[in-house]
Image (cartoon, rainbow over all chains, first blue to last red; front, side):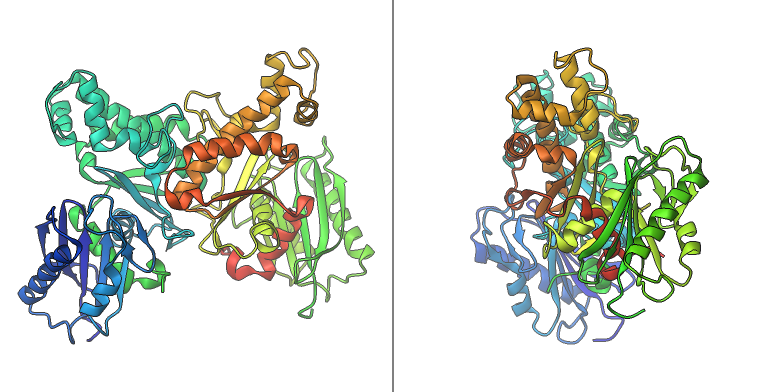
Length: 318
Length: 318
């Protein structure tokens, strides 16, 4: 390998698996993706991923034996970190699956690093996106769940078990709904897409229809549907309270928000900002900027590559 | 100086100013304190501090010219950090007072470092107290205010402006009382001593008496007074919710709580723990341990000394 070799970057979620080649400067040079198939066992799913990686390398004419700087991976949590045994909530086929070890066997001699997918998104946004050049940043994904990653004092924070950054489980309403995590009133329990859609249905929006989505809800809100608008205000309020708490606690400069629900734009960001301004009081916290993420779907891959290219800031595992 | 020289450690609060000599191993070898006088101007207050420092050095027979490893200081916030211009809420005489600069003039040739007093307490507890050997810890002071400091991934977190660790302004109840910070429902607005005492008076405890204290309230609770007990449950609940949020977000191993109200012991810690267990859901977060701080009143001085003796972990300023 040479100093110009790319990293093979992988982003594994419950809906799709993506892989690409990221250059040392952070450019995603080429990539491909495939649906995450359901109904497979652990080995079948691994072979699906393996085939995707083989294809991405072949299309880019990269020989993994001497043309690769390493392999970086983001995967849905939870996981044992840094060991990289993954049990993604939305991928039942993998329970304590030794993903990092299997990738290491597949790419012998290369460094292989793995972290939570929301953390990789946050790292990507800090390295080359909305948090570029800032010392402190919270990156958030608001989608089927609410995840995130924390960069403080210029470094990715891992926490005791690699799980720091879980902004989705900051309490936004102590009297709020039970959360899948076992807690109560977490921002995720209120603002995640399926919870919002269910709340809207209970208010009469598309009542009785099966399998409505938060995307449809946001589309209807954009057309002026009052329940859709109220649902986005509800999500914005919960997010604003959680971000106020995180800003006071961590002295954040910038919060970058991506994920499907962030596509709702000002219908989400305006109530979020209004709530945030009600709950942040201390001078330093008033300066926080909440901005849309910049890298879109490539943030996770670019962040996974940064675990290798900018390891001094983003990698503290073994 | 030699490798065995002590640090002159200073802890400045609204009620008292303390100073002592801390050995490289973290032992507070000797110390003294004086009430923080009211009604003085900035220079008169500086001279009071100066006299305290002179006395502490003389009593220990330490010659600052060649027997000192440096000067570490904790002071009430807010402050400009790391410049060390302080405007302590509870010390009106000092507004943008250049404390670090004045100490530097007083002790030429020595490193002089300064941080928030609650941060110094947290650093002390992490270096030589309840968080010893842990990679991640939140240190808290529950007293006239609710303050704290964060050690994550083995290092003190400063945040964008040196204000990370403000656990007191995590939102515990979005419908809660207005906070002095300008926000609403902050844990400090509910659980700080004066707010608790005022709440208890509104419930009929010592109604109409002027200048009741949280100490008296806790003493009455220990005697079984129902309003006193309810007040401590109220504080414990607010603290438990804020700690659940911080634990999820920062993946904390241990939370060490000191300050006057922590003296109430199980009357505070039991409801705190019960609430915490309701609101922490994720597996990694359930392992968090909430413990009393161990170093008592010397934590702030020991932490101030650690800004010099263990600078690799606790000092990132200039």
